[in-house]
Length: 154
Image 1 (cartoon, rainbow, N blue to C red):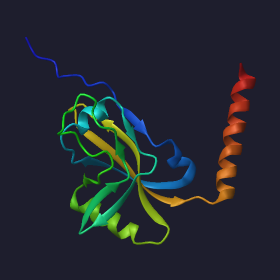
Image 2: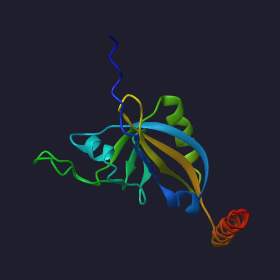
Image 3: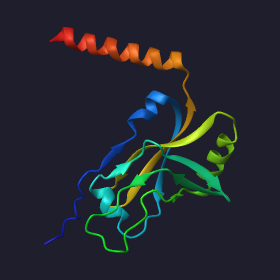
Image 4: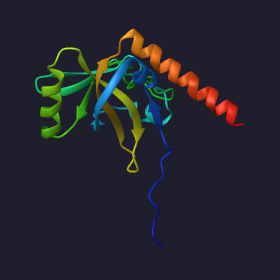
């Protein structure tokens, strides 16, 4: 009898404010270097991506400001919630991101955190430019119009 792969609960943590605050262009999927009980907290969905951003340090990409809550059943080996974590990308993607991020007004932000079929945590990052106030107002107006259209259909 063939063993089934261990099915992991689908974890989809999204940065909902990212689309409202920024114009997103290029997207990449990166692995995360995690320690100790961080993956257990991620599988429980106890992650906050709101203030997170990625920076380059000595040719490596690091995510800062991502809050992973301490694991409740963890002991004194529990992790620090807001430590910076290394992102795993191949050299070609790192060079492309480094070239793009040198432009002024451009930042790299995480948009989604998920656990893949193998049980590994992956972070979707995007190259982002900040929106102006009038762009945000237009987005709110479009969302309101779509809501009104969906109400009138039913």
